[in-house]
Image (tube, rainbow, N blue to C red):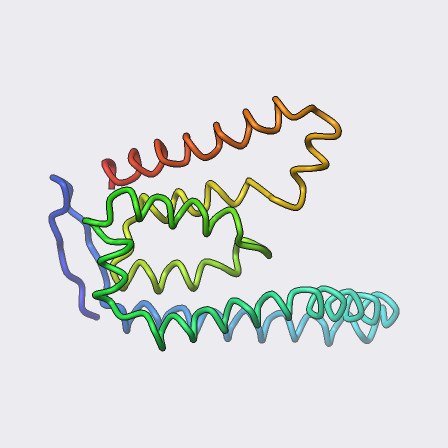
Length: 183
């Protein structure tokens, strides 16, 4: 097993090689899958109704998430196809400036679906040069939901909705700056 020691911002950090880490993750995933499958087989012999309703619920959730997952994977494919590390570094890298913050804020606001489905894309963008602060701003601005703004205005008034939206956008930039300075 290859282990390296890196000095980052005055701290020592021990890191495994990426291949070793990925092998451990795959083995753990396989063990977890086999364990779960084994538990389902045992429970199926005792509680068939429970297992059938559990599988029906799984299919219901799977169908709900499938389309969003498909859209995210299409975004990842298009990112790999069209966006090169130089272009990401230019628009979302260290020298992106105000343009990078605007892109992160707007893309966070218009993004849809479950947040954990966006993690692979954000990881890919980070590996190609996206700043950590812009990732934080993207994630922070996912709290602003354009389709729900009229409902918020109806229940709480336009002043509250506008104030909350502006504070979310402003503090996303502050949080991004803090994350960049501490990491």
